[in-house]
Image: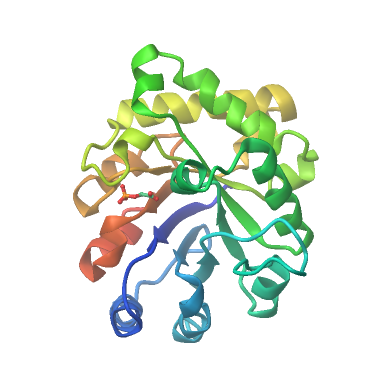
Length: 252
Ligand code: PGA
């Protein structure tokens, strides 16, 4: 059965003291996760080791928010997956819309990052999603399908099942404007269908597809209850202990 995942995306927020107390607060809530449930925290690079240490007695995971596409070398300011692996990091967020928009990350560049992450046994949380203008034009399903096709569809059937997909409509990120649970379900079903056409129904059914965009404690349960929504990637609400604890508890 595919995993249900609550993933926190801290983005470029929190100083070390605040980051520590946020994790302490969440860990001390003592949530017990079933085998099918996962909680992942994508923290800023300088906090990876601290975060790994804080969650060491739990079954939570720490993620990086990005990585570079090369193994090592003269790439000042970049972080390799080899470095992440040496810190025992198991997840990396790739292709967040903020990276696509502000750092010009293309589908083909993201394909390279996906490849190197898999080579080092690090699970990509691969983000996709359309802008408001694409949604208004009604071409969102094709647009998001293309993001998957160009970054992921070179993978084998075995490797595609190692990917976690996060559908995040850009117009819903940080805006307080959540997609309705019907809009989320409609897109998730469409993506699963695109995956099934390429890899078959069984493979498509094994891939977790998270929803992201203004998920909070008050709407998580309804969104996560949709049949093709397997949890969420959460920005703002993941910075508040009680909010994120409730979101983890809202996994189906
Ligand atoms: P948000 O961000 O929950 O603050 O909308 C989600 C994300 O960008 O991952």
